[in-house]
Length: 532
Image (cartoon, rainbow, N blue to C red):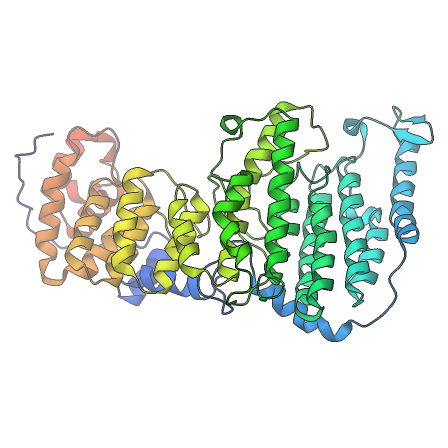
Protein backbone atom coordinates (compact mmCIF):
# COMPACT_ATOMS: atom_id res chain seq x y z
CA UNK A 1 0.00 0.00 0.00
CA UNK A 2 1.30 3.47 -0.88
CA UNK A 3 0.85 5.50 2.31
CA UNK A 4 1.77 8.75 0.55
CA UNK A 5 -0.98 8.50 -2.04
CA UNK A 6 -4.02 10.71 -1.50
CA UNK A 7 -7.25 10.78 -3.42
CA UNK A 8 -9.64 13.68 -3.69
CA UNK A 9 -13.16 12.39 -3.51
CA UNK A 10 -15.22 12.70 -6.66
CA UNK A 11 -18.13 15.11 -6.70
CA UNK A 12 -21.29 13.75 -5.14
CA UNK A 13 -23.90 12.77 -7.71
CA UNK A 14 -27.58 11.94 -7.39
CA UNK A 15 -28.17 8.29 -6.51
CA UNK A 16 -31.09 6.06 -5.55
CA UNK A 17 -29.60 4.98 -2.18
CA UNK A 18 -30.03 6.49 1.27
CA UNK A 19 -28.69 5.96 4.77
CA UNK A 20 -31.85 4.04 5.59
CA UNK A 21 -30.61 1.47 3.04
CA UNK A 22 -27.47 1.15 5.15
CA UNK A 23 -29.44 -0.54 7.94
CA UNK A 24 -28.62 -4.14 7.14
CA UNK A 25 -30.27 -5.49 10.31
CA UNK A 26 -32.73 -4.51 13.02
CA UNK A 27 -29.98 -3.18 15.29
CA UNK A 28 -28.67 -0.82 12.63
CA UNK A 29 -32.20 0.37 11.85
CA UNK A 30 -32.74 1.08 15.54
CA UNK A 31 -29.62 3.25 15.58
CA UNK A 32 -30.88 5.27 12.63
CA UNK A 33 -34.26 5.83 14.26
CA UNK A 34 -32.62 6.82 17.55
CA UNK A 35 -30.35 9.34 15.78
CA UNK A 36 -27.83 9.15 18.59
CA UNK A 37 -24.28 7.77 18.69
CA UNK A 38 -24.69 7.09 22.42
CA UNK A 39 -26.89 4.04 21.95
CA UNK A 40 -24.08 1.59 22.85
CA UNK A 41 -23.61 3.35 26.19
CA UNK A 42 -27.36 3.50 26.87
CA UNK A 43 -27.90 -0.17 26.00
CA UNK A 44 -24.91 -1.27 28.05
CA UNK A 45 -26.02 0.61 31.15
CA UNK A 46 -29.58 -0.66 30.79
CA UNK A 47 -28.24 -4.20 30.64
CA UNK A 48 -26.13 -3.71 33.76
CA UNK A 49 -28.94 -2.15 35.76
CA UNK A 50 -31.12 -5.18 35.09
CA UNK A 51 -28.34 -7.74 35.29
CA UNK A 52 -28.06 -10.52 37.87
CA UNK A 53 -24.52 -9.25 38.51
CA UNK A 54 -25.79 -6.08 40.18
CA UNK A 55 -27.54 -6.60 43.48
CA UNK A 56 -29.15 -4.06 45.80
CA UNK A 57 -27.91 -6.10 48.75
CA UNK A 58 -24.30 -5.03 48.60
CA UNK A 59 -21.80 -2.88 46.75
CA UNK A 60 -20.48 -4.41 43.57
CA UNK A 61 -20.99 -7.21 41.05
CA UNK A 62 -21.17 -10.88 41.95
CA UNK A 63 -20.56 -14.08 40.04
CA UNK A 64 -22.46 -16.74 41.98
CA UNK A 65 -25.03 -14.70 43.85
CA UNK A 66 -28.44 -13.95 42.37
CA UNK A 67 -30.94 -11.72 44.13
CA UNK A 68 -33.75 -14.05 43.06
CA UNK A 69 -32.49 -16.67 45.51
CA UNK A 70 -33.01 -14.43 48.52
CA UNK A 71 -36.32 -13.14 47.22
CA UNK A 72 -37.67 -16.65 46.63
CA UNK A 73 -36.55 -17.77 50.07
CA UNK A 74 -38.37 -14.87 51.71
CA UNK A 75 -41.51 -15.61 49.73
CA UNK A 76 -41.44 -19.26 50.80
CA UNK A 77 -40.79 -18.52 54.49
CA UNK A 78 -44.52 -18.39 55.19
CA UNK A 79 -44.95 -21.87 53.75
CA UNK A 80 -42.48 -23.50 56.13
CA UNK A 81 -43.27 -24.78 59.59
CA UNK A 82 -42.03 -27.00 62.37
CA UNK A 83 -43.10 -30.15 60.54
CA UNK A 84 -41.50 -33.61 60.82
CA UNK A 85 -38.81 -34.67 58.38
CA UNK A 86 -38.63 -38.26 57.18
CA UNK A 87 -35.92 -40.35 58.85
CA UNK A 88 -32.79 -41.54 57.05
CA UNK A 89 -34.03 -45.05 56.32
CA UNK A 90 -37.38 -43.86 54.97
CA UNK A 91 -35.72 -41.16 52.88
CA UNK A 92 -33.31 -43.59 51.25
CA UNK A 93 -36.11 -46.07 50.56
CA UNK A 94 -38.30 -43.35 49.01
CA UNK A 95 -35.42 -42.21 46.80
CA UNK A 96 -34.13 -45.59 45.68
CA UNK A 97 -37.44 -47.35 44.99
CA UNK A 98 -38.32 -45.43 41.77
CA UNK A 99 -34.67 -45.64 40.71
CA UNK A 100 -34.75 -49.42 41.13
CA UNK A 101 -37.98 -49.66 39.16
CA UNK A 102 -36.30 -47.71 36.34
CA UNK A 103 -33.23 -49.97 36.31
CA UNK A 104 -35.42 -53.10 36.42
CA UNK A 105 -37.35 -51.88 33.40
CA UNK A 106 -34.10 -51.32 31.52
CA UNK A 107 -32.85 -54.79 32.43
CA UNK A 108 -35.93 -56.21 30.75
CA UNK A 109 -35.20 -54.55 27.41
CA UNK A 110 -31.37 -54.27 27.28
CA UNK A 111 -29.89 -57.59 26.05
CA UNK A 112 -26.49 -56.98 27.68
CA UNK A 113 -27.92 -56.41 31.18
CA UNK A 114 -26.64 -58.82 33.85
CA UNK A 115 -27.76 -59.54 37.40
CA UNK A 116 -24.75 -59.74 39.71
CA UNK A 117 -25.28 -60.13 43.47
CA UNK A 118 -28.65 -58.43 43.51
CA UNK A 119 -27.27 -55.68 41.28
CA UNK A 120 -28.06 -54.95 37.66
CA UNK A 121 -25.09 -54.19 35.45
CA UNK A 122 -25.26 -53.00 31.85
CA UNK A 123 -23.13 -50.83 29.55
CA UNK A 124 -24.35 -47.22 29.49
CA UNK A 125 -23.97 -47.18 25.71
CA UNK A 126 -26.62 -49.91 25.48
CA UNK A 127 -29.13 -48.03 27.63
CA UNK A 128 -31.91 -45.91 26.14
CA UNK A 129 -31.56 -42.16 26.72
CA UNK A 130 -32.70 -41.13 30.20
CA UNK A 131 -35.84 -39.01 30.42
CA UNK A 132 -37.13 -37.12 33.43
CA UNK A 133 -40.60 -38.24 32.45
CA UNK A 134 -39.59 -41.78 33.50
CA UNK A 135 -40.21 -40.60 37.10
CA UNK A 136 -37.04 -42.35 38.26
CA UNK A 137 -36.25 -39.25 40.34
CA UNK A 138 -39.75 -38.91 41.79
CA UNK A 139 -38.48 -40.14 45.18
CA UNK A 140 -35.89 -37.36 45.22
CA UNK A 141 -38.66 -34.83 44.61
CA UNK A 142 -40.70 -36.26 47.46
CA UNK A 143 -37.90 -36.22 50.03
CA UNK A 144 -36.64 -32.80 48.94
CA UNK A 145 -40.15 -31.36 49.01
CA UNK A 146 -40.72 -32.68 52.53
CA UNK A 147 -37.41 -31.21 53.75
CA UNK A 148 -37.95 -27.80 52.18
CA UNK A 149 -41.26 -27.31 53.95
CA UNK A 150 -39.75 -27.81 57.41
CA UNK A 151 -37.92 -25.46 59.73
CA UNK A 152 -36.08 -28.33 61.32
CA UNK A 153 -33.02 -27.00 59.57
CA UNK A 154 -30.38 -29.62 60.37
CA UNK A 155 -32.55 -32.65 59.65
CA UNK A 156 -33.82 -31.05 56.46
CA UNK A 157 -30.33 -30.14 55.28
CA UNK A 158 -29.21 -33.71 55.95
CA UNK A 159 -32.00 -35.09 53.77
CA UNK A 160 -31.35 -32.53 51.05
CA UNK A 161 -27.73 -33.64 51.02
CA UNK A 162 -28.89 -37.23 50.71
CA UNK A 163 -31.05 -36.22 47.74
CA UNK A 164 -28.13 -34.59 45.93
CA UNK A 165 -25.71 -37.44 46.65
CA UNK A 166 -28.05 -40.21 45.52
CA UNK A 167 -29.39 -38.34 42.50
CA UNK A 168 -25.85 -37.52 41.36
CA UNK A 169 -24.79 -41.15 41.61
CA UNK A 170 -27.90 -42.25 39.72
CA UNK A 171 -27.47 -39.73 36.88
CA UNK A 172 -23.82 -40.79 36.53
CA UNK A 173 -24.98 -44.35 35.88
CA UNK A 174 -27.67 -43.76 33.26
CA UNK A 175 -27.47 -42.65 29.65
CA UNK A 176 -28.09 -38.93 30.18
CA UNK A 177 -27.30 -38.07 26.57
CA UNK A 178 -29.62 -35.06 26.38
CA UNK A 179 -28.64 -33.69 29.78
CA UNK A 180 -32.09 -33.96 31.36
CA UNK A 181 -30.66 -35.57 34.48
CA UNK A 182 -27.90 -32.98 34.70
CA UNK A 183 -30.45 -30.16 34.36
CA UNK A 184 -32.47 -31.76 37.14
CA UNK A 185 -29.44 -31.75 39.43
CA UNK A 186 -28.77 -28.11 38.61
CA UNK A 187 -32.35 -27.20 39.49
CA UNK A 188 -32.19 -29.24 42.70
CA UNK A 189 -29.06 -27.36 43.81
CA UNK A 190 -30.76 -24.04 43.08
CA UNK A 191 -33.73 -25.06 45.25
CA UNK A 192 -31.34 -26.02 48.03
CA UNK A 193 -29.74 -22.57 47.80
CA UNK A 194 -33.15 -21.03 48.28
CA UNK A 195 -33.78 -23.19 51.35
CA UNK A 196 -30.36 -22.49 52.87
CA UNK A 197 -30.89 -18.77 52.33
CA UNK A 198 -33.92 -19.08 54.61
CA UNK A 199 -31.91 -21.14 57.11
CA UNK A 200 -29.19 -18.48 57.27
CA UNK A 201 -31.77 -15.80 57.91
CA UNK A 202 -34.07 -17.58 60.36
CA UNK A 203 -32.16 -20.29 62.22
CA UNK A 204 -30.04 -19.79 65.30
CA UNK A 205 -26.44 -19.24 64.11
CA UNK A 206 -25.14 -22.51 65.55
CA UNK A 207 -28.08 -24.43 64.08
CA UNK A 208 -27.67 -22.77 60.71
CA UNK A 209 -23.96 -23.52 60.78
CA UNK A 210 -24.66 -27.19 61.46
CA UNK A 211 -27.15 -27.28 58.58
CA UNK A 212 -24.57 -25.72 56.26
CA UNK A 213 -22.03 -28.36 57.29
CA UNK A 214 -24.48 -31.06 56.20
CA UNK A 215 -24.58 -29.52 52.72
CA UNK A 216 -20.83 -28.92 52.57
CA UNK A 217 -20.13 -32.54 53.52
CA UNK A 218 -22.10 -33.67 50.48
CA UNK A 219 -20.45 -31.05 48.25
CA UNK A 220 -17.04 -32.46 49.20
CA UNK A 221 -17.85 -36.14 48.84
CA UNK A 222 -16.22 -38.17 46.10
CA UNK A 223 -19.30 -38.19 43.87
CA UNK A 224 -19.20 -34.41 43.44
CA UNK A 225 -15.45 -33.83 43.27
CA UNK A 226 -15.60 -34.52 39.57
CA UNK A 227 -18.58 -32.23 39.07
CA UNK A 228 -17.45 -28.70 39.84
CA UNK A 229 -20.69 -27.08 38.81
CA UNK A 230 -22.70 -28.87 41.49
CA UNK A 231 -19.92 -28.65 44.04
CA UNK A 232 -19.53 -24.87 43.75
CA UNK A 233 -23.31 -24.48 43.63
CA UNK A 234 -23.67 -26.22 46.98
CA UNK A 235 -20.71 -24.39 48.49
CA UNK A 236 -22.26 -21.08 47.46
CA UNK A 237 -24.99 -21.75 50.01
CA UNK A 238 -22.44 -20.30 52.40
CA UNK A 239 -22.82 -16.86 50.83
CA UNK A 240 -26.10 -16.48 52.71
CA UNK A 241 -24.29 -17.02 56.00
CA UNK A 242 -21.59 -14.46 55.14
CA UNK A 243 -24.34 -11.83 55.40
CA UNK A 244 -24.40 -12.07 59.20
CA UNK A 245 -21.66 -11.22 61.68
CA UNK A 246 -22.32 -14.26 63.85
CA UNK A 247 -22.46 -16.83 61.05
CA UNK A 248 -19.86 -15.55 58.55
CA UNK A 249 -17.19 -17.86 59.85
CA UNK A 250 -19.28 -20.86 58.74
CA UNK A 251 -19.06 -19.64 55.14
CA UNK A 252 -15.27 -19.48 55.30
CA UNK A 253 -15.15 -22.85 57.03
CA UNK A 254 -17.03 -24.25 54.02
CA UNK A 255 -14.51 -22.71 51.63
CA UNK A 256 -11.61 -24.05 53.69
CA UNK A 257 -13.01 -27.57 53.71
CA UNK A 258 -13.54 -27.49 49.94
CA UNK A 259 -9.98 -26.31 49.32
CA UNK A 260 -8.60 -28.97 51.65
CA UNK A 261 -10.74 -31.65 50.00
CA UNK A 262 -9.58 -30.74 46.50
CA UNK A 263 -5.95 -30.51 47.62
CA UNK A 264 -6.24 -34.06 48.90
CA UNK A 265 -7.98 -35.01 45.65
CA UNK A 266 -5.03 -33.59 43.73
CA UNK A 267 -2.49 -35.48 45.85
CA UNK A 268 -4.47 -38.71 45.53
CA UNK A 269 -4.51 -38.38 41.74
CA UNK A 270 -0.91 -37.18 41.43
CA UNK A 271 -1.88 -33.71 40.16
CA UNK A 272 0.81 -31.08 40.58
CA UNK A 273 0.24 -27.33 40.44
CA UNK A 274 1.61 -27.21 36.92
CA UNK A 275 -0.72 -30.02 35.84
CA UNK A 276 -3.76 -28.34 37.34
CA UNK A 277 -3.33 -25.02 35.58
CA UNK A 278 -6.01 -22.48 36.35
CA UNK A 279 -5.69 -19.28 38.33
CA UNK A 280 -5.86 -19.84 42.02
CA UNK A 281 -7.23 -22.35 44.45
CA UNK A 282 -5.35 -24.66 46.74
CA UNK A 283 -5.07 -24.32 50.48
CA UNK A 284 -2.81 -21.29 50.14
CA UNK A 285 -5.59 -19.63 48.19
CA UNK A 286 -7.84 -19.86 51.22
CA UNK A 287 -5.38 -17.77 53.19
CA UNK A 288 -5.12 -15.25 50.37
CA UNK A 289 -8.84 -14.76 49.99
CA UNK A 290 -10.43 -15.88 53.19
CA UNK A 291 -7.87 -16.08 55.95
CA UNK A 292 -8.13 -12.47 57.08
CA UNK A 293 -11.89 -12.45 56.66
CA UNK A 294 -12.42 -15.61 58.63
CA UNK A 295 -10.39 -14.31 61.52
CA UNK A 296 -12.35 -11.07 61.45
CA UNK A 297 -15.76 -12.61 61.10
CA UNK A 298 -17.31 -10.27 63.64
CA UNK A 299 -16.75 -7.21 61.46
CA UNK A 300 -19.33 -5.35 59.42
CA UNK A 301 -21.61 -7.17 57.02
CA UNK A 302 -23.71 -6.57 54.00
CA UNK A 303 -26.38 -8.80 52.54
CA UNK A 304 -26.11 -11.64 50.10
CA UNK A 305 -27.27 -15.12 49.28
CA UNK A 306 -26.11 -17.82 46.99
CA UNK A 307 -27.36 -17.79 43.46
CA UNK A 308 -26.87 -18.25 39.78
CA UNK A 309 -24.24 -16.80 37.57
CA UNK A 310 -23.29 -16.60 34.00
CA UNK A 311 -20.11 -16.68 31.91
CA UNK A 312 -17.08 -18.93 31.44
CA UNK A 313 -14.41 -19.40 34.07
CA UNK A 314 -11.52 -20.17 31.79
CA UNK A 315 -12.50 -18.56 28.52
CA UNK A 316 -16.09 -19.34 27.62
CA UNK A 317 -18.34 -17.90 24.95
CA UNK A 318 -21.64 -16.33 25.79
CA UNK A 319 -23.30 -15.30 28.94
CA UNK A 320 -25.88 -17.73 30.26
CA UNK A 321 -27.53 -18.56 33.57
CA UNK A 322 -27.13 -21.34 36.13
CA UNK A 323 -23.32 -21.61 36.15
CA UNK A 324 -23.10 -22.56 32.49
CA UNK A 325 -20.15 -20.15 32.29
CA UNK A 326 -18.16 -22.94 33.94
CA UNK A 327 -16.61 -25.32 31.40
CA UNK A 328 -18.92 -28.27 30.87
CA UNK A 329 -17.63 -31.59 32.20
CA UNK A 330 -20.23 -33.83 30.65
CA UNK A 331 -20.41 -37.51 31.50
CA UNK A 332 -17.88 -37.35 34.33
CA UNK A 333 -18.57 -40.12 36.80
CA UNK A 334 -16.45 -41.37 39.67
CA UNK A 335 -13.36 -42.34 37.70
CA UNK A 336 -10.53 -41.07 39.85
CA UNK A 337 -8.08 -43.35 38.11
CA UNK A 338 -8.56 -41.41 34.85
CA UNK A 339 -5.76 -38.78 34.99
CA UNK A 340 -7.26 -36.51 32.33
CA UNK A 341 -10.66 -36.48 34.01
CA UNK A 342 -9.13 -35.77 37.42
CA UNK A 343 -6.94 -33.00 36.05
CA UNK A 344 -9.88 -31.41 34.22
CA UNK A 345 -12.03 -31.49 37.36
CA UNK A 346 -9.29 -30.00 39.52
CA UNK A 347 -8.47 -27.31 36.97
CA UNK A 348 -12.12 -26.37 36.74
CA UNK A 349 -12.38 -26.19 40.51
CA UNK A 350 -9.37 -23.89 40.73
CA UNK A 351 -11.06 -21.45 38.37
CA UNK A 352 -14.56 -21.79 39.81
CA UNK A 353 -13.45 -21.28 43.40
CA UNK A 354 -12.23 -17.82 42.42
CA UNK A 355 -15.86 -16.81 41.96
CA UNK A 356 -16.75 -18.09 45.42
CA UNK A 357 -13.82 -16.34 47.05
CA UNK A 358 -14.74 -13.06 45.37
CA UNK A 359 -18.40 -13.24 46.32
CA UNK A 360 -17.50 -14.06 49.92
CA UNK A 361 -15.46 -10.86 50.08
CA UNK A 362 -18.37 -8.82 48.80
CA UNK A 363 -20.81 -10.56 51.14
CA UNK A 364 -18.48 -9.82 54.06
CA UNK A 365 -18.33 -6.13 53.23
CA UNK A 366 -14.70 -6.22 52.05
CA UNK A 367 -15.50 -4.19 48.95
CA UNK A 368 -12.03 -2.81 48.20
CA UNK A 369 -10.46 -6.23 48.59
CA UNK A 370 -13.07 -7.71 46.25
CA UNK A 371 -12.35 -5.05 43.63
CA UNK A 372 -8.63 -5.72 43.85
CA UNK A 373 -9.28 -9.47 43.62
CA UNK A 374 -11.11 -8.94 40.31
CA UNK A 375 -8.26 -6.81 39.02
CA UNK A 376 -5.61 -9.29 40.12
CA UNK A 377 -7.41 -12.10 38.24
CA UNK A 378 -8.29 -10.13 35.11
CA UNK A 379 -6.79 -12.91 32.99
CA UNK A 380 -9.92 -14.95 33.85
CA UNK A 381 -12.64 -13.74 31.44
CA UNK A 382 -15.49 -13.75 33.96
CA UNK A 383 -13.42 -11.79 36.48
CA UNK A 384 -12.46 -9.17 33.91
CA UNK A 385 -16.10 -8.92 32.83
CA UNK A 386 -17.18 -8.36 36.43
CA UNK A 387 -14.57 -5.62 36.83
CA UNK A 388 -16.03 -3.83 33.83
CA UNK A 389 -19.40 -3.93 35.56
CA UNK A 390 -17.90 -2.59 38.78
CA UNK A 391 -16.30 0.44 37.12
CA UNK A 392 -19.25 1.19 34.83
CA UNK A 393 -21.90 1.09 37.56
CA UNK A 394 -19.83 3.57 39.57
CA UNK A 395 -19.29 5.82 36.52
CA UNK A 396 -15.54 5.33 36.83
CA UNK A 397 -15.04 5.72 33.10
CA UNK A 398 -11.66 7.42 33.49
CA UNK A 399 -10.44 4.14 35.00
CA UNK A 400 -12.35 1.82 32.68
CA UNK A 401 -10.91 3.30 29.48
CA UNK A 402 -7.22 2.67 30.32
CA UNK A 403 -8.19 -0.74 31.73
CA UNK A 404 -9.84 -1.63 28.42
CA UNK A 405 -6.83 -0.29 26.51
CA UNK A 406 -4.50 -2.48 28.55
CA UNK A 407 -6.71 -5.56 28.17
CA UNK A 408 -6.97 -5.05 24.41
CA UNK A 409 -3.19 -4.86 24.28
CA UNK A 410 -2.40 -7.74 26.64
CA UNK A 411 -5.39 -10.04 26.07
CA UNK A 412 -6.73 -9.11 22.61
CA UNK A 413 -8.58 -12.39 22.11
CA UNK A 414 -10.15 -12.59 25.58
CA UNK A 415 -13.92 -12.92 25.44
CA UNK A 416 -16.42 -11.19 27.71
CA UNK A 417 -18.69 -14.07 28.68
CA UNK A 418 -20.99 -12.15 31.02
CA UNK A 419 -22.29 -9.90 28.25
CA UNK A 420 -24.38 -10.75 25.18
CA UNK A 421 -22.30 -10.73 22.03
CA UNK A 422 -24.49 -8.10 20.38
CA UNK A 423 -23.71 -5.75 23.28
CA UNK A 424 -19.93 -6.00 22.85
CA UNK A 425 -19.44 -7.23 19.27
CA UNK A 426 -15.83 -5.97 19.14
CA UNK A 427 -14.87 -7.32 22.56
CA UNK A 428 -12.56 -4.96 24.42
CA UNK A 429 -12.79 -2.44 21.62
CA UNK A 430 -16.53 -2.24 22.30
CA UNK A 431 -15.76 -1.54 25.96
CA UNK A 432 -13.40 1.24 24.86
CA UNK A 433 -16.14 2.62 22.63
CA UNK A 434 -18.69 2.69 25.47
CA UNK A 435 -16.20 4.39 27.79
CA UNK A 436 -15.37 7.03 25.19
CA UNK A 437 -19.07 7.68 24.64
CA UNK A 438 -19.51 8.17 28.39
CA UNK A 439 -16.56 10.57 28.45
CA UNK A 440 -17.74 12.52 25.40
CA UNK A 441 -14.59 11.74 23.39
CA UNK A 442 -16.08 12.48 19.97
CA UNK A 443 -12.81 12.92 18.08
CA UNK A 444 -11.44 9.61 19.36
CA UNK A 445 -14.69 7.89 18.47
CA UNK A 446 -14.45 9.20 14.91
CA UNK A 447 -10.94 7.78 14.64
CA UNK A 448 -12.21 4.43 15.91
CA UNK A 449 -15.13 4.33 13.49
CA UNK A 450 -12.99 5.29 10.51
CA UNK A 451 -10.56 2.48 11.35
CA UNK A 452 -13.45 -0.02 11.62
CA UNK A 453 -14.77 1.02 8.22
CA UNK A 454 -11.34 0.76 6.58
CA UNK A 455 -10.71 -2.66 8.13
CA UNK A 456 -14.30 -3.92 7.83
CA UNK A 457 -14.94 -7.47 6.73
CA UNK A 458 -18.15 -8.22 8.62
CA UNK A 459 -21.63 -6.82 7.83
CA UNK A 460 -21.98 -5.81 11.49
CA UNK A 461 -19.44 -3.06 10.85
CA UNK A 462 -22.37 -1.16 9.37
CA UNK A 463 -22.82 0.48 12.76
CA UNK A 464 -19.40 2.11 12.54
CA UNK A 465 -20.44 3.99 9.40
CA UNK A 466 -23.76 5.00 10.95
CA UNK A 467 -22.10 6.32 14.09
CA UNK A 468 -19.44 8.17 12.16
CA UNK A 469 -22.12 9.86 10.06
CA UNK A 470 -24.04 10.91 13.19
CA UNK A 471 -20.92 12.29 14.90
CA UNK A 472 -19.52 14.11 11.91
CA UNK A 473 -22.19 16.68 10.98
CA UNK A 474 -20.45 19.28 8.81
CA UNK A 475 -17.16 17.39 8.86
CA UNK A 476 -18.69 14.40 7.06
CA UNK A 477 -17.03 15.21 3.69
CA UNK A 478 -13.67 15.40 5.45
CA UNK A 479 -14.34 12.07 7.20
CA UNK A 480 -15.12 10.45 3.86
CA UNK A 481 -11.93 11.79 2.35
CA UNK A 482 -9.89 10.37 5.22
CA UNK A 483 -11.56 6.98 4.74
CA UNK A 484 -10.82 7.03 1.00
CA UNK A 485 -7.16 7.91 1.60
CA UNK A 486 -6.74 5.30 4.35
CA UNK A 487 -8.39 2.54 2.35
CA UNK A 488 -6.38 3.40 -0.77
CA UNK A 489 -8.84 1.64 -3.09
CA UNK A 490 -8.09 -1.66 -1.40
CA UNK A 491 -4.49 -1.85 -2.61
CA UNK A 492 -2.69 -4.66 -0.83
CA UNK A 493 -5.92 -6.19 0.49
CA UNK A 494 -7.26 -9.59 -0.41
CA UNK A 495 -10.96 -9.33 0.44
CA UNK A 496 -13.75 -6.95 -0.50
CA UNK A 497 -15.01 -4.39 1.98
CA UNK A 498 -18.81 -4.47 1.81
CA UNK A 499 -19.16 -1.45 4.12
CA UNK A 500 -16.92 0.65 1.91
CA UNK A 501 -18.91 -0.50 -1.09
CA UNK A 502 -22.16 0.64 0.49
CA UNK A 503 -20.59 3.98 1.36
CA UNK A 504 -19.62 4.46 -2.28
CA UNK A 505 -23.16 3.64 -3.40
CA UNK A 506 -24.82 5.96 -0.89
CA UNK A 507 -22.42 8.83 -1.51
CA UNK A 508 -22.30 8.39 -5.30
CA UNK A 509 -18.52 7.94 -5.33
CA UNK A 510 -17.98 7.00 -9.00
CA UNK A 511 -14.22 7.55 -9.34
CA UNK A 512 -13.55 5.64 -6.14
CA UNK A 513 -15.77 2.79 -7.35
CA UNK A 514 -13.86 2.49 -10.62
CA UNK A 515 -10.51 2.35 -8.85
CA UNK A 516 -11.91 -0.14 -6.30
CA UNK A 517 -13.18 -2.44 -9.07
CA UNK A 518 -9.75 -2.49 -10.66
CA UNK A 519 -8.59 -4.30 -7.53
CA UNK A 520 -11.81 -6.29 -6.99
CA UNK A 521 -13.38 -6.99 -10.40
CA UNK A 522 -16.00 -9.24 -8.82
CA UNK A 523 -17.53 -6.13 -7.22
CA UNK A 524 -18.56 -4.66 -10.60
CA UNK A 525 -22.04 -6.19 -10.49
CA UNK A 526 -22.80 -4.76 -7.04
CA UNK A 527 -21.35 -1.36 -7.92
CA UNK A 528 -22.88 -1.26 -11.42
CA UNK A 529 -24.96 1.92 -10.68
CA UNK A 530 -21.69 3.81 -10.20
CA UNK A 531 -19.93 2.40 -13.26
CA UNK A 532 -22.38 3.45 -15.99
